[in-house]
Length: 232
Image (cartoon, rainbow, N blue to C red; front, side, top):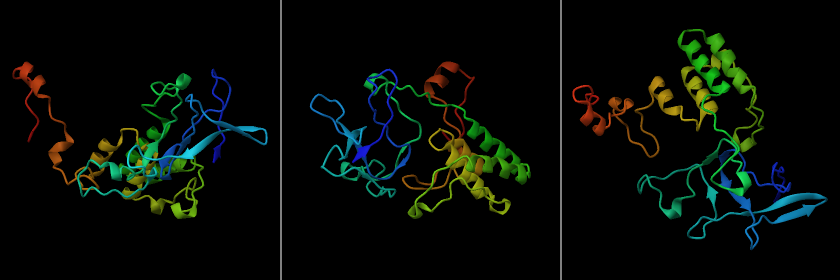
């Protein structure tokens, strides 16, 4: 199964392998290497491709096929025969420099314009300015252009929603769609009152855990300045 790829500036000018970004579900594929650890390339109709192959897990010779379902009945650490469970995520492109897996040409954003739109939409919504909140959410929605297969819900990307659709739950979800994998989820869940809820792999938690404990070594050297947060 060949995969068309872009050449990387500063290398040999030949195609380079890039993983798909987004949610990785189903059978996973990766580049094929030769005995000298170089990509195996094929030229078809004058176009050069990197040959890819179906991947297996590191152990048990299971095919690496990710499934959305998670089973934590045996604990929150999945055993090797269940490592295929759960969707993996590549939100930002990883572009190694000179083939090194420890470096990348891609900077990870700390604050993005899309994040600012979601913050403002939430502020508008909580202030009762739902029309302005809707406008910000639709700016984000209509900037997405992926066409989804029918079994994933059909073509919902790029479509604006109406004012009647913008409930608090819908706003919560829209913020999540835009900002997943950017370390914004915890404070968002606290703001929307969902942080304590139980979900896959997590039992219901106490409200006091919204605030982190103060490290004991900090308390030890501070004298009477710092007192441990309540209930810790």
